[in-house]
Length: 202
Image (cartoon, rainbow, N blue to C red; front, top):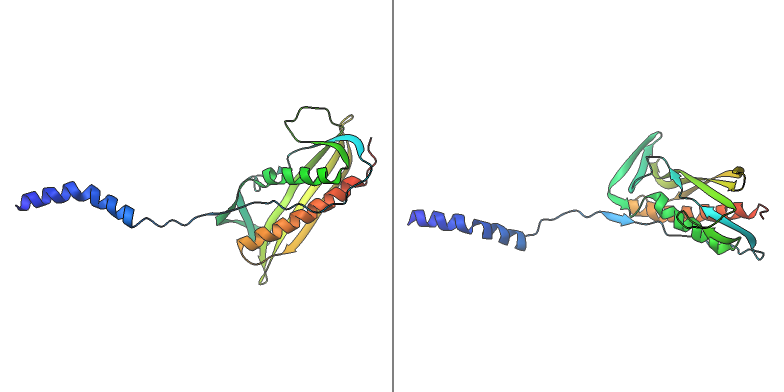
């Protein structure tokens, strides 16, 4: 009889383990995923320029070529949040925002992105130099630096280069940083649109 009970227990073990997993699911900590999606309200230029602009993907260093969210607690030191991340890399999120902002100004007849066939007159190259949340002296802020370079396609000459730097106070949480970065990106894009409006093209 004892032998039969042991056999029954062993044969029932898989079912018991399965039942435990059904009625007592393993708790896992989820990862929060965020996006950059804010664009500014821009002034619309009345006279459209008869030129086409190609907007390239923003260049980044390896540090920013990731979906990980960067923060810093002291100078020259960076770290990544473990349970919070971007939905895409900063470069992938910024390209459509840059394009949408420039299109909204109606400065150009056409605004192109990489992969679209067609001729273009000017090229806009950008480089993300910094995008992080900073915790320092019991405060929190976000910092973003975007470099823009306008190039004449016909002769490959640089028309102008400018760095846009924005700092924005943030609630001291990862989500607070996301909200502040969306505001900061919107400000940078507004400055970028003004930068492009200052040149005579055609």
